[in-house]
Every structure is written in C-alpha cells, then in structure tokens.
Length: 527
Image 1 (cartoon, rainbow, N blue to C red):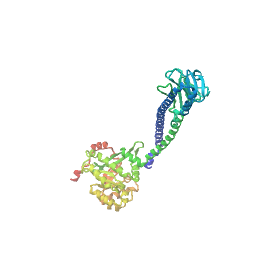
Image 2 (tube, rainbow, N blue to C red):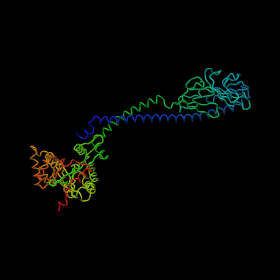
Image 3 (cartoon, rainbow, N blue to C red):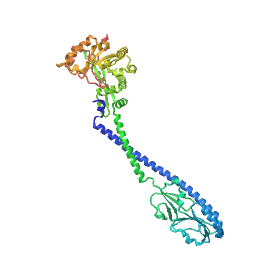
Image 4 (cartoon, one colour):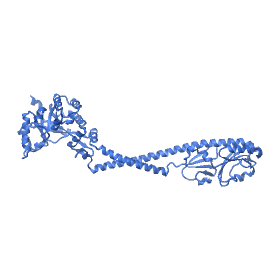
C-alpha cells in the first residue's frame, strides 16, 4: 500500500473529513445568515431614515408654500365672491394637491374656487376644525361636494378675526406628494391629524386608537398639528426565506468544496510537505558495532514519520512516494537539519572519527543542488569530528550516469560511500570496482539465512569473500541472534548492527545507551 493508501484507506479518515466539512458548512450557514440579515436590517433602517428626512423636507416645503399662498388670499375675504372667485380659482388650479379654496367670513363659507357663491356654516361643513387656532389641520371622511372621499382641511385664520379666513381642502393624493417615486417602496404610512389618521392600507379614515400596534417610526413635524407614522418591517418573512435558501445553497457548496479540498490535502505530496513544515519527521539512531571488539563504532541515521492522524508511517512507504513525487530533496534537506541539530549532543558520547551513516537517494544525487546541500550539512557539524558515510542502493548506481563524478567529489569532502542492500538490486561486480566503494552493507535477508539450509546461505560467504578481495569494508545489518553474530565474527565482517544489540533509539536514549556501553577508540586504533 502506497502513502496515499495509508493516509486515506480507512473509513474513519473519510468520516473525519465529512464531519469537518459539515462543521465548516454549518458555520458558514450561521455566519452568512447572520451577516446577511444584519445587512438587510441595517439597510432598511438607513432607508427608513432617508425616507423620513425626505418626507420632512418635502412636507415642510409643501405646507410652507400652501400657507404662503393662503396668506396672499386673506385680503380677498373683505371682498364679495364675484370679485374674488377668479383669483381663488386661479390659485387652486396652480397649487398642487388643492381641491378647493373657500373664503370664510363670520363663520360662513361664502365663496368657493370650484362653485362660486355659496353660504354654508363652517360648523356643518368642517365640524372638527378649531377655528380659534391661527393654523389648523383636520382629516374628514366626507365633504358636501364629494361624499365618501376623505380629505384634508387646512384652516388659516385672519389674525384679527376669529371666524374669518381661508379654508383649503386637499385631495387624498397628498401622500404621493410627500413620498416621491424614488422612495415608492416605503410600505405603509399613516398621516395623523387629531384623532384620525389617513393611511395607505385603507381607503377610509382610521381612528388613531385603531392603528396597527406593530412597531412604527413616528415623524413629528414641529410647529404643525400633524405627524406621520412609517410602518416599515426591518425583516420581512420573504427576506428571511430567501436568505435561508441562499445560505443553504451556498453552505452545501462550501461543504462539498471543503470535503474535496481536505481530500486533496491528504495527497502524498501535500502530506509530506506539511509533515516537513510541522516537524512531524524525527530521527532515530541505531548503534553500529565494531565486530571484533563489540564496541560502539558509530550509528545509522533513520528518519521516521509520526503522522498526527495516521500515526507511525513506515519509511519504505513514504520514502518511495517522496522519490516518485520529487520531494525526496526537501525531505533529505530536512534530515540534514535534524542531524545538525543533534550533532553537538552526539559528540558528547561518541569519539572523534565516529561514523554517521545515512541514506542518500539517487534522485537527490543527480540534482544541481546536491553539492551545496552537502556543503551546508558539513558546515553545521562539529569541525572534523564525525566521519559521514552516505549509503546508496545498487539501483542508484545503475541509474545514475554521473555517479562516478559525484562519488569522487564526495571522497574529496572526506565522505565515505557504502553500497546499501548489496545483492538485492541489479548490480554486477564491475560496478563495485568502477565506483570505488568504501563499504558494502550486507542485506538483512542474507544475515537471516545464517544457520539455515537455504539458497542464500552460500551466497553470503561469496559476498564477504568478494568484499575482502576488493578491500571493501563490510557492515552486516539485521543481526538478531548470537548464532548470526558468531558467524559474522568468524568471517571477519567489520561492523554489525541490529536488534541483537539495540533497536533504533531516540537521541536521549542513544546518549544513555552510549554512556552505558563501551565505544570504539578510533584514536588508539590509528596509533
């Protein structure tokens, strides 16, 4: 199973992604709904404020113009209807919203802009008007000339006479005069005068105490006996319905997008890069022993990956995927940084000249940055203290055309080269001689055949004999029993490692292990 299979094969993994996607969709639903409804409410409040400001401005402008016109007509109350009718008819025709102007004298309406001479008592014509006030507004359901059609009566009294003045009757079309087409979406309005109200939701006048109890914005006009009520729902059922529907559709889209995005994030490439960034990779050190003396001669660096969800991922799984995806280079650079970080601690328990072995991918070996990466590693290690050994598989030597030049360069840097897992790849003897190898690592498969009557057993003797003839040092890995150890000692294998001595250890456990065991003295060996 590849890395992708390890990361995504379980149902629990997909269930976790599904749960995360649902949570993301739910959070988006709540957030989008809340923000949208808040914006709608805020927009409606702002809209209502604009309507009120416009209505106040328009109303004051209209009434000021109306009163000014009526004041100009006040001197006509001292004249007979015959000489005044033409003037008041002209004013009625050119004053917007005016149905009629009436001249009133001694409590009687004696002249109409519409019908001329008449003699009607004011108390019968408009009983609600307060004639004592200088300026009064009243609503009335019927008038003698137009029964059944509400009207607005405006009374302007002569300053020096209580029952003489001008009376204007205004059409119901006053409301469109106040609210221009720009604000035509304003829902319901009630114009309140005294105990009655002229509304947009009924054709007849309505008592003030019967107005809707829902919340309304009230506009009081200073200096005038009228007010305007605005019934404006900040959130309508339609607003909520459409918002919830839109939120649901978008949330479903977000959930699906999140689901596939999380699946994509679990691709081997993304998982490897994220693991490097989040320091999910770590190092274990396996001690390498000098066979004849049984002392610690060095170590092999083994990279490990502890995934936060999938747990431990085997190296043979993620290294293969790193090579296939081209991420082996950043992974090896990360390994170099981890080694450099632990090097000062390793120097406290290992002698000068101790060997540090680590695997190098053929793919990294062929990159232009390889030499610079190695320079940076050497610069971070204690100067001239450790002896690096790069382990490269047979497959790497066969496929890498520039291996010879790179190996020569590594030798010049003081780095030794080992052929790893010898006998399991495609090499032939000519490669051992051509590439000038320093070590030959005997694969654990051959070591396991020791003491068993298998086809691999005689091959192991041939491998050891070949290495001696080519003057290549040998390292046997995977040693697990005393029988295997004696066999390797008898055949003068130079170094051994395996669970017979120690499993791979963390940096702290490795230091404790070295303190409890004898290390190989390279200085004494040289003398």
